[in-house]
Length: 134
Image (cartoon, rainbow, N blue to C red; front, side, top):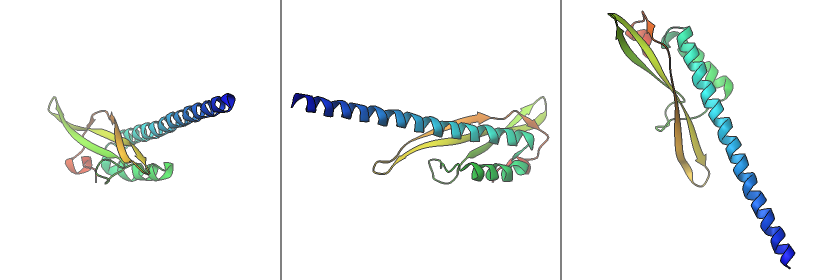
């Protein structure tokens, strides 16, 4: 009888470690996806020099990689905020790109949302209309 109780306890411990290991792997994969989407959005904003030219490309990339996260208000997949900069009488913008990792469990619900932020370099010579993202 003692051996059967010990075997059952060992199986429970193994199951707990397998669940923890799989959870860590799932978090790592989600983090990598959000980080990659943020980096691609920053690259596209810098390449097309503003949000007006890059907006369609960013949305196409989001749909192609299957990035379906939402922010705290459940309205967007990615947050792109233009920040005005004046440097030596030159007007420019840099963009703060934020992607999100949300932990949503069936019975518990969403209990944690982690933002991942990145910034572009300063882009000079774009107008206010070109800088604003829809």
